[in-house]
Image (cartoon, rainbow, N blue to C red; front, side):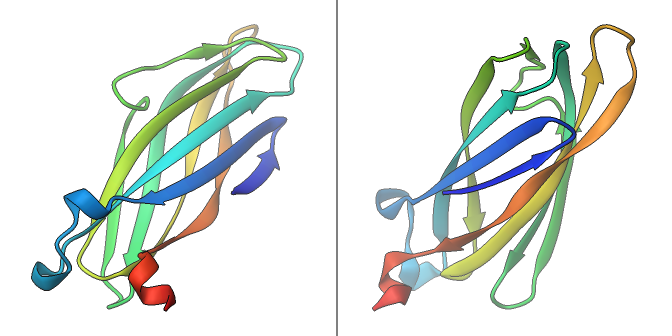
Length: 128
């Protein structure tokens, strides 16, 4: 698990290789990741959007952006957390993701960026 705190928000990421959804012979490697977002500020925040940069080991780069996460724009109160699962397919057995969220301070409606820590996606067969 990797974690990073920026602007009073702690983002932690845990990754999982999805062997049953992957097909290495067809160069299809599927990974899941669990994100936990903890609000360490003294004001409620709303997750507005996210931007992901996804890299595989063949230097292919994808950029994904959109509103909220998994169809939600959660409000996270001070001292609370929000967790979700999502996934990422790659054409190689190794990759990396990094990105950021845009949040809104629910007290003054100001917007701010929160970094998502870089994390590795590695199929277990590559680690042998």
